Structure formats: structure tokens, C-alpha cells
Image (cartoon, rainbow, N blue to C red; front, side, top):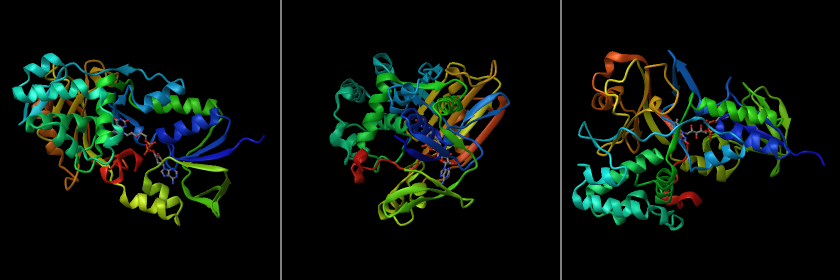
Length: 377
Ligand SMILES: Cc1cc2nc3c(=O)[nH]c(=O)nc-3n(C[C@H](O)[C@H](O)[C@H](O)COP(=O)(O)OP(=O)(O)OC[C@H]3O[C@@H](n4cnc5c(N)ncnc54)[C@H](O)[C@@H]3O)c2cc1C
């Protein structure tokens, strides 16, 4: 029997993984990537010996990506963060409740708030997320927690677990699933950055026989009626395929099949999750005991990724700072993120070796919306 010919559009981690798995499954796979390099948003850039991911990237150890990497035999090297964690409130660091002791000693919660959060976290793993699809995260927080301080803290945990600041839109199903995953097994910061994953999956794909074409933009999926015949590249050439996998955003998928009303609607209705990010390479860490800070009164994140993974030269520190965007907050200024660093690592400006600011990165092209039923939408 002839092998099925599959064209994969997109050489990010999603497309590369699909290509590797399909090639292993016996398909004849060609992957087309429009840029000159593979990796998409999982790219890592080296600046002065510091390895900058495109914003803070954490691999959920109990998540789907880890399972798929496992199927490919990829065991990502890296470390698990956790030590030196703080809550950031009113420009000051406070104890971040991350276990029974810190939950009882923190001053970001009242006594009633502590009991409420303790109850929620104790039962978190047993929450059935299936019925939560059409419920917004805001509604879920409001029904589960009576106190404002508890909602602020759990809302902050949802932000870091989902990257999403717009809890009136985000489905509670996804928020709770991500919290469960984070609490069950934490995350991994990857040695060398996410390009380590890209390189490993690329190797698996090539070994399985997948062909990877760079600088190859696909302009259209070629159809005869509803049957796939192949893909047309920007240079006008047509490449035959029995099936096409498009590993891009809803807008990119819709652009390749112009007459498809369902894909066009998906693209129109998709709400991206966005973040502003500041990457910093420091010659030294002014406050070595502070390795992570999470805003409870604002959508802030700061983390010394090099404390858990190999991302900085000897003695240096690689820090990711982020602001989760949502609603009308679309392009914050760099100084907002610098203020987070002022609270997290006072005196950091004297130690900057490398830096990069990105005002609005797309973390996910399609936020799982409560209005669309959550993951089923
Ligand atoms: C700031 C930030 C933080 C993140 N943090 C995390 C995190 O902590 N944990 C996590 O799991 N994920 C995180 N992500 C998301 C993660 O980077 C992506 O989900 C992951 O890299 C997989 O991306 P992808 O392959 O789906 O898409 P992309 O990486 O966007 O790849 C799509 C590729 O398709 C190519 N392409 C598109 N259209 C065409 C076409 N017509 N022809 C040819 N090529 C085309 C593009 O050039 C691109 O290379 C984060 C992303 C950002 C930006």
C-alpha cells in the first residue's frame, strides 16, 4: 500500500511534532515553514551568553506537550522552579502562599481568606472540569470564593497558569485544568531554552523521514470539491498531498482555505491571549533570595529562569518579566515592567548586560472562551 502523503504547514513546535508523529506512523510527510528557521514562538535567541526565550516559557510537567514529547522519546533537560517565591502587592514583596506553612504565614490573605483558599486548594484535584466549559473564570471565582483577597490570590494563580488576564471571557474549565496541572507536577524551565525542544523534535522528525522545507510559504490548500489535493506555495508551485495539517493560528488556517465559512468564523471570533515581556540578562542578581514574584493586585510576573535552568553565563542571571494583557490593556510601556523589577530586584539597572522588550506578544491565538463552551468550543 502506498504511504499517505501529508503536507504540514508551519514549523513551530506544533507543526514539527505533528510531522514527526505522522512520519513515524508511516506517512510521507513534507513540512513547509515560511521563515528561514524552525521553531516559531519556541525560538530562543542568545544575547551576550544569555538564552532568551520569546517571553517566559514553562513546560507543564503534567501537560499534553510533555506527554507528546515523551511519545517522541524527547526528555527535556531543565529544572523545576519554586524556591524564593513571592507575591507582589502595592509594589512590595510578600510571602506567596505555596504550601500549608506559607499559606498560614502570608499577609496577602486575611484569616478567613486563608481558610477559604486552603479549602479550595485541598479539593482542587477532585474538581470535575467537564461542566465548567460555559462558565467564565470570573463567575467560577465569585461562586467558589466569598472573599475579595482569596479571589485576588486565586485569580493571580490562574493568570500565571493560563497567561490570561481576561477572566470574564476565559472558560473556567481551562483555568481549573491548568491549575490542577500546575499543582500536580509544577513546570519545567528548559536548559538552553525552548530551542532545545525544537532541535530535539526536528531530529526525531528527520530521523523518521519527514522532509522539512524552509522559506516555503504556503499560500493555499488546493481542493477539488471538498477533497484535498495538495498545497500551493508562494512561488506558484503545487505539491500534491492526500491530507494537510495546518499548525498555525485560526487566521492563518482560514487564509489558506478562503471559501470556508466555518474557518472564517473561527478566525473572526478568536480572541488572542497577549503579554508584554521584558527579558533581562544581569551580571549578578541584586537580591539572590528572590527568584519569582507574582502580582496579586495586578497582572505581573517576574521570574529568574536561570535559577532553575541553564540560561545564563556563570554568575549571571536571566530574568523574565511579563504583564498579562487583556481587555483595553493592549500595549503597556516598558517602564511598567521596569517598576516590577524595581520591587523584585532593587538596584537591577546597574547590572544589565542584555535586555529585550516586546510590548505585545501573542501567547495563544485563541483563548478558550466560556461563551463558546470552553474546550468544546
Ligand atoms: C510570551 C509567550 C509565552 C509563552 N509561554 C508558554 C508557556 O509557558 N507554556 C507553553 O506551553 N506555551 C507557551 N507559549 C506558547 C508556545 O510558544 C507555543 O504554543 C508553541 O511554541 C507552539 O507553537 P505553534 O507551533 O502552535 O505555533 P508557532 O510557534 O506560532 O508556529 C507557527 C509556525 O507556522 C508558520 N506559518 C504560519 N503560516 C504559514 C504558512 N502559510 N506557510 C508556512 N509557514 C507558516 C510560522 O512562521 C510559524 O513558524 C508562549 C508563547 C509566547 C509568545
